[in-house]
Length: 505
Image (cartoon, rainbow, N blue to C red; front, side, top):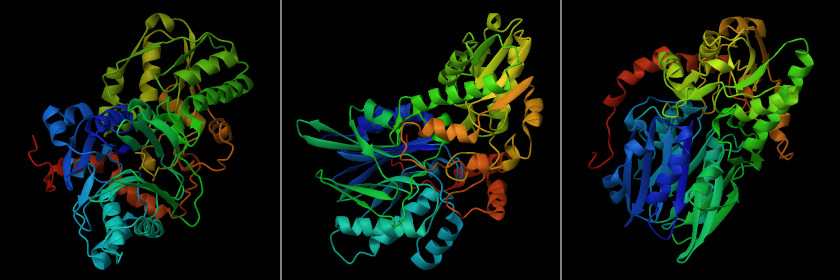
């Protein structure tokens, strides 16, 4: 997962880009980067770590300019090398810098095409560098000396024809401005905002609306699937639908876990979606577990708190906070390596013994992916004195790998893969386990926007909306991205040449 921001302003944008990335930190804690344009020259700072660790005062002073983009990363393709931190840069044509959220599903064939046909070299294993060079190639096809909005939109239309997968993208073009575009399925989110200042109108692009709020920009609208918006350096806006067959298919896991509850994606409130998920799951529990004696409902902080509260109301049961969260530990789900995830669960949560002792507790979580967190939390509940531990997941069973930018690449690491509910229940150590149905999840998320007829639910049902995923692809993905391979590849990651960060320190 990644988060992106982009601003075309009338005054320096470095601080606003920093602020935007900070509130999008939940989307990526591995690396961060900012590029600005000053005097027709890129200013770049990027590296591994949290936003606050990558950017210090000396770096911010270098990032001059009224136009810029930023990125926070968790690698779902490539390695964890700082050389693969974004944004990426290409000097031809014009000079382009690009940041991308998502995954390209035809990356292998694109790399071959770039090497043999476009004659462009890609130095890393990141598919974002592929996307940068494909965009550069298509822009280079223009016969005009000066780039026009039509040239930009033609190039992006050709990108859509050549590229498959999920990509919410923002890019800078030296001397011209900023362009943002979204894949024809709208899998990953992208929003557009503006604000009026004494010196004129400023514009912002971001992964989530919460970044607009943090930077005092007014939300205008979501970028539509397949759409491109071109912002000139002097503040003019041009937009065009660049895909022949765009279809809204937002990733439903954004609403389950990834997005902040104070964000709105494609006119759907993340918070309202989670409340409705709790309503639906509460109704299912009442119907299917009518004979189960539950004393208290306890959430696993913090994405499940709103869900659990609604379940408690549906069941007319007490709601209690049974775990205290250490807010200085990152999101365990997106931590690289199983051992690190296991260790971090204990650092992250601690049980309040009085809320468990002698009680039949219903623990509520947003989802069960690898089962690491669920198993350890159930153990903590038992150590705290719980008599019975029941478990409810607000999302259905995650049975299939994600190929669109969420780190679930290996089916063998998914606890629900090839297992039924009873098997999963036994493995995580619960007395009883229930999952949300996929039908109820779709209804809950889509309630506030009936115009959305389809979601990407591939992790639950194996239906990949790009229609290009087969067993051979998934096997190759597993071989490249399972925990063991990833840990080994990351050991040598920093041997990749670092052609960036003038004055690194």
